[in-house]
Length: 217
Image (tube, rainbow, N blue to C red; front, side):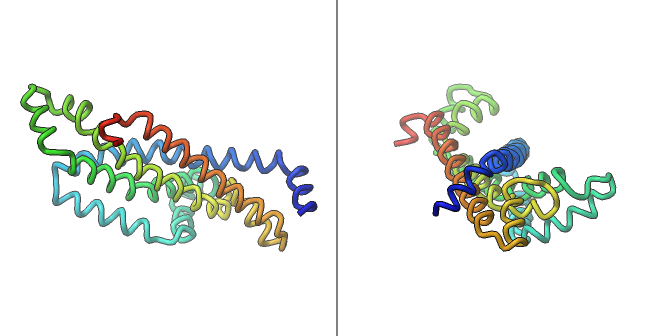
């Protein structure tokens, strides 16, 4: 135990730097995934046929092993000399985020109380007003649950991104495995778990902060 604490003391700056790199990669991927997934999920509530197709494609994407998807990205992005590094990992994480975000957004909007929707229509609200003032606020807890799932999922999958030179906490784990260094493996694994817990707690706070009391209760 003392040796490990000593190891942490010596390597703390590097661990913090890799944690920051990991957090930036996941955060940027989630932001882009939200910009794609939430509007798409909302649109799919108006097109049931397309909804089934899109959700199936997103489900299939999520079943692809992460190392395989990262491997597929290499030849694709090699065309623009970005076969390894941040870009292919970023795109892969955006793809992995789509299912929970699209599915939860679609389900949440579809399950908004019809009486509330009818009341909004009766008040003369336009479609955009009804969406922003009634449907999204009521759907927010379910949408945020999808976002939280995507974030935690990506923090874990992001570890594999180290194999294609994207950095992050996976560097500690991969180096630990190759060197047979348990301290590196344990430190990287704990940092990943702690990052996931902190991210989930922050998103839960945001969810509670912006969910109206009537819905939260």
